[in-house]
Every structure is written in C-alpha cells, then in structure tokens.
Length: 349
Image (tube, rainbow, N blue to C red):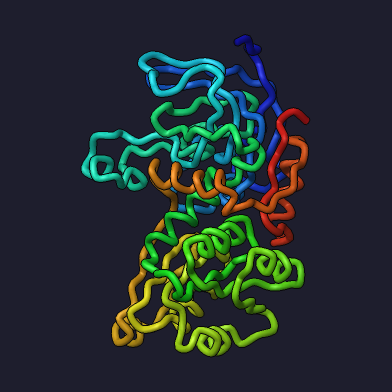
C-alpha cells in the first residue's frame, strides 16, 4: 500500500483560541516497534481537544501539537513486532494511545491510570492529520459492518461514557442522571444506559437537546434553565438518582449532582471544567453515604465492549460530517455550547 511522504495536519504552536490552529504540511510518521500507521478517514472533535488548544488543564501538553483522538481509518503500514494488526485493518485511534503494560495498574486492567500513559492529541500527535501513528496494542478494531464515520465518535465519547456507566454501579431499572445529556458524550450515555436497562434522567437545555435525547428514549428531560433541577430529579426518580454521570462542562452541575443524589449512590466525575472544584456539602456527603468516583476514559476491554453495542445497532451516534478545513469553526461552536451530538471531520475534504 502506497502513501505520501508529506501530509496536511491541523497544528497549533502555542495555546490560545481557534485562530492558533494552522493547516500545515508535515512529514508522514514512521511506525516504530508495536506501532502502526493509520490513514485517518474520519475523526471526531472532542471538548478535550479544545482544552488542549487552550492549555487550561494542569497537564503538560506537547507543543507544537496535532490534536484529535477520535480517529477511524485503515492501517497502511506496521512496525516491528506487530502481529495483532495487518495492513488493511480498519481501526480506531483513541485518547489512550499507549500504556506501559507492566505496572501494577496495567497488569490489573487499569491501564487508564498508568503513570506512563501516552494520550493522543495531547502528549503525542493525534488524529487531525491524514496519517497518524497508533499503538498496535491499543488500537481498536472496527467491525466491517460499522461505517468509519459512525465509529469515530465512539473512540472517545462512547468508550468514556460506557466505562463511566459501569463504574456508577446503577442496575437495571434504576435511575441514572446525566447532566450534559444532549452533548457529544451525553447523547451516547443516554443510549448506552438504555441498552443496559437503566432509566434515564437527561439534563440539558433547549428544544433541540430535548428532541435529541427523547429520540433515544430518555425517560425524563430536565431543562436546567427553566426547571428546578434538584427538585424535579428527586420527584421524578422517587428520591434521587441511583447514579449520576456529570458530563456537563458547567461547574454548577457538580453542586447539583450531590444535592439530588439518592443516599448510597455514586457520582461519576467525567467532565473536567477548567479550575472547577467539587463544592459538595461534606455533612450530607457523609450522612447520605455518597460515593464520588473519577472516570476519564475506558480500557481496551471497554473499547471492545462499547464497539459491540454499536455493531449490534444498540447505539447510534448523532453526528454531522464536516470538512476537515472547518475545525477552527467547530472549536468556536463548541466554546459557545452550540453543538448537539458530535461533529465528525471528513479528512478527504
């Protein structure tokens, strides 16, 4: 399989706004040991990409950086020692690009907290380029029945919320509350939760978000701009949520989640608004025996399981395909909170 020596990539050399993103000609990488070169056909755009651009997380970012971590494409070259993948395989490139495989966390399947983790589009160059380097152990195989543009949003958004739902401990018939339900992660969380037989309270604002989550059979919609969120959640669930996935980028969502939580329930922190603090009342946190659990991405096994839900038609990302060249515009819309579902970039345009 042939490919060029040079390619176009969306690069930023310093932190700031969308105006800092430049489309530049860069070399096509050479896969090393346990690596593959993937011809990226489609890539989703995640809020984490915006954080990387703005540099507002307390985590060092590679500069200059090619962002992106929801890539779907085809393997065009394999490096030394690769036997799991071959040229022509359809794979996804995820947020977790690689882990060491040997530490105590990796050995028990918690590679997401490996001290040597490498992150696509953050600590290593990501999927906002035509040819990206991926770790062969961590790249996720995409079934032939799943279109690449459909698979792309699941590489981060889908895997992340699927893992978070597992962490929540919410059982069939129990209530899970999802602040930010109409967004890129949220609309997938609603679907995974319903596929796992949970009842869903979707929290967001606007008719477009209400229509979106209702189309995925959310049991209750709460508009945070017009409703008393805490009171409505308690009323509709008969005492509070059995589990909450905070996917909203508003710090206030965390305060409300602790207030409408059912005694003994778990709140999963997923969204990471810059500088946000957990403002829960310690008295009620203790008396209600609430648990707070962080969950920022899924493991390799979570990736396989999340993709299986997609292949069986139980989850269907709501997305809009746009040309690669519109990435700066997408960042602006994301910053303004005007995106329902996910934007997927077509790298052929």
